[in-house]
Image 1 (cartoon, rainbow, N blue to C red):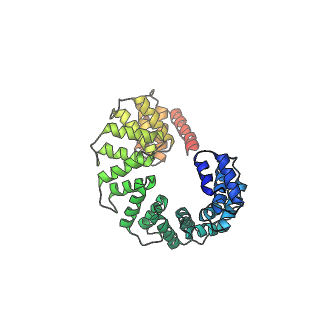
Image 2: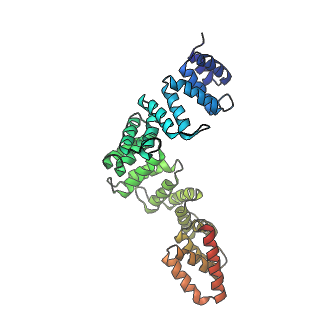
Image 3: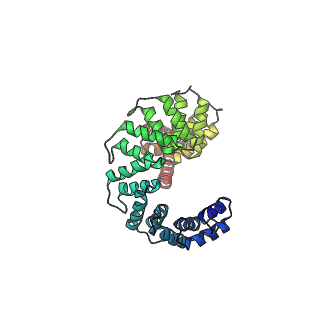
Length: 353
């Protein structure tokens, strides 16, 4: 007689056709594990064209007989409206069934539902209770959200030590947001004892996963020699990584390093490129500096109109230096040049906001 393990062995070996044949035979015999396995295969399109209706039906078959994982998957399909009629309340009911059977992901999702009040009445205390259960089971996302709850006193009494504890547990599992938050906490020292070395440790973990804010903050620490030996080269390296991901502050700081030749060869042309990218994102400091570059002809042909334009835009974004540069240029410009610069500034503001 065919058993479930035969189907699993076929699945693990990549023989999906055989796996489906075995699971279908068992599913017709009301084997809930086989029904759930079929639901997963149809849901993911593994060994068969993806078919959400088949997945929905097999999940329901298993869920109605008490299969916890199927209850969660069925509830998630209802909740997300994935090729089914979206029904938050019905989805929450099924996810609750799975959560009470100890499925950590269901507990986490139910906690999020209570936190946001979607599918259930908002109740942050219940949210924290479910996050706690999932966190105790080792689910990193739940550990992170529980840490946030303790950090802000949301649904629980504010407790920074518990916040740090749960951020750390999540961070040790590679949760990038938790790693960044730990770095931020240790660098600022507002709610934990300031420790630059610990901050660098956690920022680096997040930065190596491509987390752009961690890359930028790690750059700042290398630039200032906080928790690490001061190194313009390392600062430039991490600024570059963050800049390539579109971080305006990193783009601006990288441009300044190219201007000064700190950590990399002096190159006004590259400085102009990075300043322009940061300026077009609305960073006032970059807009002001770009105006200075055009005024002095650093990396570009000297152009008073464009210098005035960028000073004007920077001033409108709150840069006193940009506004001062614009005013300083005006006595050297004709009225037509000033009008031209003003019109260009208006157009650029309309384009980039």
